[in-house]
Amino acid sequence: MADMVSMKVEARPGVGKGAARAARRAGYVPGVIYGAGKEPTTIQVLGSQLLKTLKNGGYYTTMFELDVDGEKHTVIPKDMQKNLLNGLPTHVDFLRLAKGATVTIEVPVEFVNEKDCPGLEQGGTLNVVRYAVEVEVLATAMPDGFVIDLTGYELGDSINASAITLPEGATFTITDRDFTVATIATPAGMGGGSDDEDEDGETTTETTEMGPDITVDQDEPKD
Image 1 (tube, rainbow, N blue to C red):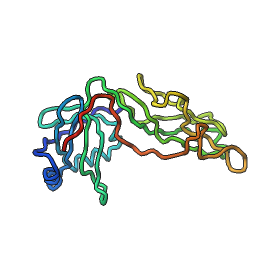
Image 2: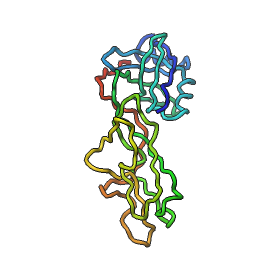
Image 3: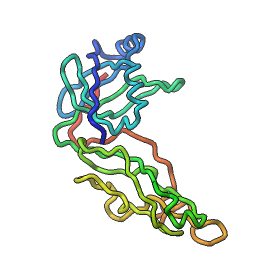
Image 4: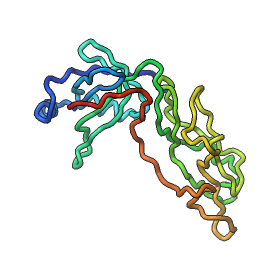
């Protein structure tokens, strides 16, 4: 996990649609900090600062220390609303973290050493079943991504969750089997099964990044 990111934000005067529109006209993105059994704190983030943070990547797996006019909050991003026309953020939610909080997040998977994979060298195809895997992990130890080494995999092999090294204390949310992450699909004409499903019958899909779920008591945001 990357180091905690510090970011200064401002307390937002007033709540409701009128106050949010005023913040946006002034170049800010309205937001709220909630959770950990405390009252929600309405904030506004400078739009240019938020966009710079988003361009750095890994937004939903980044822990932030938000300085709200001198009061610091340890948070992770929970949700973001965007303008349907230009895709720019219009509202952000941050979840305040209690000490020892755990999160359930989807972590992207990267595959390396394709040239050392006999199955691919023989004309096989890397059929990715899961572009991300869901894990439960301490908020202070969220990984940015997982790397799977393809060295030695043959045609027809399945690459399962056990090929992933988890951080200490982390667990997969799927616990009843060593689920498939990818397969080395056999070329057409050489036989073999469908390239579109793993042995569990799971269809290949691409996963989008979502805000993590937190296993601590949460207050609903008020805006």
